[in-house]
Image (cartoon, rainbow, N blue to C red; front, side, top):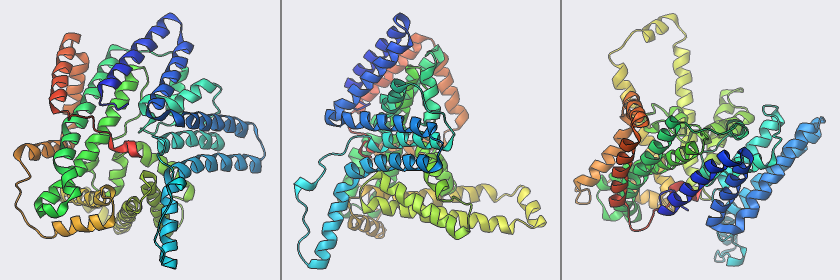
Length: 489
């Protein structure tokens, strides 16, 4: 049930009316049960066979967290923590990485024996559960927080099940922390006029990002260039790479906007997940702005437990590299994703090494005074850093997008031809690409004024604006709804 379909609009309208009617007529508990049932129904619409998986993993984590909180013996608590991590990663590893593992074993065996590499269909997982990477991380983080003493075990089993299965964030995030969402389910829900206006605004913005920008760039530029790069000039291939950077941002941030807006209309607020990532001045800044819920999860539950930056510089670089390699693997069972993570780990290590060198040099008093004085070179240097960071991110996106390393090499080789003819770049397509990238540089104050203006506008004005957006979406939409990129993860 894609967010960018009429089916979802009908589903959400029914959930919206039903949930608030239940609050008014019967109270909070019937509404919670209703939201849990419709969330499970939403997940079952993808593949009902995997519904017992999300229910079972949620139940086991809820019970293990309560057992850990009661237990006083450190070894027993640690054993239960290891059990829940092994269980969650075991589910994730089997359903998402089993095929990848057996394919690599078959390839290695073929290399050693000279026999053809083959894997029978009987040994494959046909289709991994949608959203397993997201709800696994959310449920596992709850048990870890209870183990650390950062969160008390939750008393309500139904509320915990709803925390994991709540449909706006279920299949593609954001990865909502239990400390952010569980308390909201404990309070009586409310929906102010401002929240309603903000929710509608975010849904409209998200759909425009997805349908008008992301889908059009994908169908008319990105998919064609990445499928047969040898048929295009260097300029057109480079535009395709830029187009994918814009596509994946508009696609995923658009999904997040719709998810946040949908939750707001149900009286629940999700954390921010994007903050103009292509304005980043270095890779560390990029990961503070891109998929914030994942980057903070990796920091808090992987990088810091590995040692973070508490050890030597070499150990810090090792921890960065391990974190990003596993972050790449989290995105998909492919060596391309691992290499994408490697590029980001390498870039983060280089960024940290450069920053440390600057800090050591700035330790002298005269250098600190010079740094504090305004410099006419500050803006050009900042712009250069943003430009270099964006192009490094785009280089990594190539490996994220392609099906094989050979295809990535072909794309880079085609860019290296430096040919500039561009019959496949009509002005409308270039304008779409420009709008998608330039949206990062819209002043925050201007965006807030537009958002606030919509929120306080009279209902007829809001309705008219949303009607115009709906017409635009209808005209821009393709014949079939295009799935969101991050649904595959």
